Amino acid sequence: MGSYFHFSAAVLALATLSTATAAPVQCTASFTDISAADFVQCLDPGWNLGNTLEASPDEGSWNNAKVTPPVFELVRNSGFNGIRIPVTYADHYVGGSPNWPINATWLQRVSDVVDMATAQGFYVVTNMHHDSWKWADVTQTDANLTMIHERFYASWLQIARTLACKPSTLALEPINEPPATTAEHGEQINVLNQLFLKALADAGGHNARRVVTLVGGGEDGAKTAQWFTRPAKNVTNPWAIQYHYYSPYNFIFSAWGKSIWGSAAEEAALVADLAAVRGNFTDVPLLIGEFSASQINCEASARWRYTDLLVRTAHLLNTSVMLWDNGLDNLDRPAGKWRDPTSLGLIMGIKDTPEKNNSLPVGTTDDSAKMQSSSAYIFRRVGEPTTAQALPFEFNGNSVTSIVTGNDNKTLSSTDYAVNSSHIIFSASFLDNYLSPNGAAGRKANMTVNFSEGVPIPIEIVQWDTPVLASLTSLVTSATATTDISIPVTYKGLPRVAAARMVGVNGTILVDAWTQYLGPLQQGRATFSNQYNFDDSHVIITSTALQDVLSSDESTVVTFEFYPRVPGNAVNYTLTVGK
Ligand SMILES: *[C@@H]1O[C@H](CO)[C@@H](O)[C@H](O)[C@H]1NC(C)=O
Ligand SMILES: *[C@@H]1O[C@H](CO)[C@@H](O)[C@H](O)[C@H]1NC(C)=O
Ligand SMILES: *[C@@H]1O[C@H](CO)[C@@H](O)[C@H](O)[C@H]1NC(C)=O
Ligand SMILES: *[C@@H]1O[C@H](CO)[C@@H](O)[C@H](O)[C@H]1NC(C)=O
Ligand SMILES: *[C@@H]1O[C@H](CO)[C@@H](O)[C@H](O)[C@H]1NC(C)=O
Ligand SMILES: *[C@@H]1O[C@H](CO)[C@@H](O)[C@H](O)[C@H]1NC(C)=O
Ligand SMILES: *[C@@H]1O[C@H](CO)[C@@H](O)[C@H](O)[C@H]1NC(C)=O
Ligand SMILES: *[C@@H]1O[C@H](CO)[C@@H](O)[C@H](O)[C@H]1NC(C)=O
Ligand SMILES: *[C@@H]1O[C@H](CO)[C@@H](O)[C@H](O)[C@H]1NC(C)=O
Ligand SMILES: *[C@@H]1O[C@H](CO)[C@@H](O)[C@H](O)[C@H]1NC(C)=O
Ligand SMILES: *[C@@H]1O[C@H](CO)[C@@H](O)[C@H](O)[C@H]1NC(C)=O
Ligand SMILES: *[C@@H]1O[C@H](CO)[C@@H](O)[C@H](O)[C@H]1NC(C)=O
Image (cartoon, rainbow, N blue to C red; front, side, top):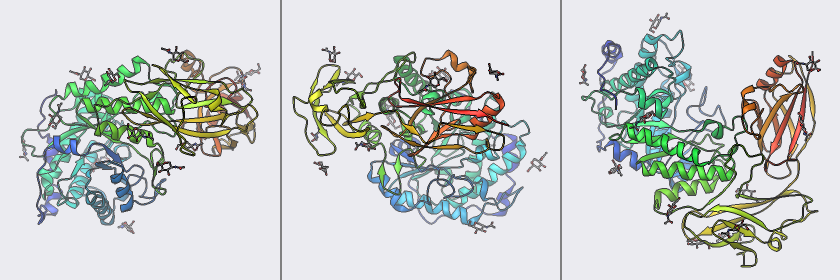
C-alpha cells in the first residue's frame, strides 16, 4: 500500500524559486469539483492523440499533421469519452536554469489543443511526455538531480499557470513512463510527483482542485505497486494512478517471431497483472493510460482475443482504459476511418454492454507450434483444390445469427456454412465462389459473422502464394550499412510480414542467440522495427541489422515470413559481407 510521503528538502528548496516571478493565477471562470474516481470513470474508454504534440522537435514532425477539431469530433462520434494529449516540452525551451522558460507560442498551442478536446465534451489528460528520457531521466549515471528537480518544477509551474483556468474536465499527469530500475529511482519518481503537486499548488487558478493521475516507475503497474508513495494528506488534488500495459512485450512489439498469443497461461498472466495493480491500490482510482495491440503488427485473431480480455478484465477491476494510437495503429486521421473497426467495436461493446460475451476467432496459441492458424481468415494456397474449411471459434455462449459477405451484402444460406459447438464450417461449394486452384492470388472477400450477442467478427478469404521480392541479395559494406535496405515486394495475399529470421550462412543467429531455445516459429527471429520492417510495397532490413551483419562478418540469410505462417510462405534474402 505504500506510506504517505512528505514534501522533501528538494521540494521545499524550490518553494522560494520562480513563484517569486509571478503571483498565483486568478480565474474568473468557475470550477465544478469532480472526484478522481468519477473523472477516471467518465473518461472510459479513452483515446491517445499519439505522435502529435509529443513529436520531436515539433507537432507535425512525425507521421501526423497538426491536430484540428475534426479529429476530436470523429473520435467523439466513435464513442470515446476521454482523450490523452501527450506533450513533449524538451524542444520548446527558450532559456535555461533556473526558470527554464518554455516558448509562449508552444504553451498557447497546448492550451488551444486542450480546448479543442474539452469543447467536444471529452475528459482530457495532458502530460509531459518524452522529456522523461530527453532530460528528466533519473537513471542516467551522470543525472544532475538538482537540474532535473529545478527544471521539472519550473516547467510544471508554467504549464499549470497556462492551464490554470481550464474546466475540471482537464486532468494532469506529471510525466510519461519515467525510467526507473531500482528503489532509489522509484523514490525519485515520487519526488517528481511531489514537485508536480507543489508546482500546481503554487501556480494558482484551479490547479489545486484539478484531478491528477500520478505515476510510478516506468508507468509500469508492478513497479508502481513496489515503489509508489501516496501524496501527503494535505495535498488537495483529487488523485488517481495511471499505468500503461503492453504485456507480453514480445507479442505486442513482434519481438523474436512472437506472432501468436492466448494460451491459458498467457491469459492468466494478463488477468493477474491487472489484478495485482488493483490489489495494491484497492482504494485508488486506476487508469491504464496506454495499451494497444496494433493492427500493423499483431495478428488479427490474437489481437482481438487480447483486446477483449484486456478491456474486459480492466472493466471488472474498475480500471479505465485509453487506447494508444500513433496515427498508424488505429485511426486513419486524414481518411477519417478506423483501420481495425473490430478492435474498436470490442472496446465500445465492453463499455456499453459488459454483460454480453463476444464470440472470438481462435488461432494457434501454443508456442511450440510449427505453423500458425487463425480463424480470422480462410487461407487457401494458389494451386490447391478448394475444400470445406472449418474455423474454430470461442462462441462464449452465443450462437451465429447470420453471415453476410462484405462485397455484395449476400446473406449466406444453410448450404454455405454450418455451425457446431466449436467451429464454423464453410462449404467447398460456397468457397468455390472466391477460390479456385488456378485463380489469382489476392484478398478475395470479407464476411461478417453476426452473433446473438457481442460484436460482429469479420473473416477474410485470402488466396495466397509466396510473395515475390524485386531482388534477392545485396552486398553489405560499412559504406552501405548506414541505410536501411528497402526491397520492393509483390505480396500475394496479406500485405504484411509476420516475422523475419536472420541467421548466418554458418548457422550463427544474428541477434539474440538465446532464441534458439524458443519454439520453431521463433528460433533465430529478429524484432519488428528494430531489425526489419515493411510497408504496402516494400520489405525492409534496417541499418541496425546491417551493422550486426558487418560485425558478425558472416553472410546472413534474412527469411521474410508471411501469413499464413506455414511452410512455403517465406522468401530468403541474402546479405553478403563485402569490404
Ligand atoms: C503539506 O504538509 C507538509 C508537511 O508534511 C508541509 O511541508 C507542506 O507545506 C504542506 N503543504 C501544503 C500545500 O500545505
Ligand atoms: C468503481 O468505481 C466507481 C467510482 O469510484 C465506484 O462508484 C464504484 O463503486 C466502483 N465499483 C466497484 C465494483 O468497485
Ligand atoms: C517560439 O515558437 C515559435 C513557433 O515555433 C517560433 O516562431 C519562435 O521563434 C519561438 N520563440 C523563441 C524565442 O524561440
Ligand atoms: C546541476 O544543475 C544545477 C541546477 O541547474 C546547476 O546549478 C549545476 O551547475 C549543475 N551541476 C552540474 C555538475 O552540471
Ligand atoms: C502488489 O503488486 C505486486 C507486484 O506486482 C504483486 O506481486 C502483489 O501480489 C500485489 N499485491 C496484491 C495484494 O495484489
Ligand atoms: C461468457 O463466457 C464465459 C467464459 O468466457 C462463460 O463462463 C459465461 O457463462 C458466458 N456467459 C454467457 C451468458 O454465456
Ligand atoms: C450493405 O448493407 C448495409 C446496410 O444494410 C449498407 O449500409 C451497405 O452500403 C451495403 N453495402 C453494399 C456493398 O451493398
Ligand atoms: C465441429 O466441427 C469440427 C470441424 O468439422 C470437428 O472437428 C468437431 O469435432 C466438431 N465438433 C462437434 C462437437 O461435433
Ligand atoms: C477486408 O477488410 C480489410 C479491413 O477492413 C481490408 O483491408 C481488406 O481490403 C478487405 N478485403 C477485401 C477483399 O475487401
Ligand atoms: C446482427 O445482430 C444484431 C443483434 O445481435 C442485429 O441487430 C443486426 O441486425 C444483425 N445484423 C445482421 C446483418 O443480421
Ligand atoms: C563461415 O564458414 C566459412 C566456411 O566454412 C568459413 O570460411 C568462415 O570463416 C566462417 N565464418 C564465420 C564468421 O564463422
Ligand atoms: C532459406 O534459407 C534457409 C537456410 O538459411 C533454408 O533452410 C531454406 O530452405 C531457405 N528457404 C527458401 C524458401 O529458399
